Length: 233
Image: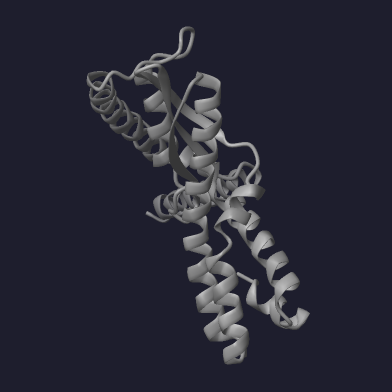
């Protein structure tokens, strides 16, 4: 009986040592080879991307049918209309790490005697629309910043006025845009071009902040320190 208990005790001790050794090795493996977040989240990411592509494909087909019915077509050698529109929707569905749209998207239409002239004008109009979108976003942030900083009524009015008039300045500062699609149709002897362009949202906000700050420095007497605090968002 004593012999049995002795062997039982040794077996129990061996099992405990084995478990401890296994647990120690497991901890060491986790420390040396940490779990890859992207791999751990791979399945949800793949599902999300698949769903995004499905939605973009569906929206593109629907939109392309409407355009074709109205006489729109793409230039020879360009990607098919459906593919161009699908690309634009995929970009619009992309979100940053905080869940906000990664890109802002705008459209411009123009009619001219030549396709190149119409495209140039349409692009400028699209940039102006982009500027309007980012101006609205930045204006809301500045209004909130005015409330949190000690600006007097005159300074606050100057800031609001400058921001309201900043659309054209922002449009001039916007650099190269991403062309998402370009479609064409004949209007009598002229050509109408419609373009859809994209621009990185975070970059657009920085462009707007710099343009507005420069204008505030030129047109107001607000102290440098106050401007620093005002534009710190």
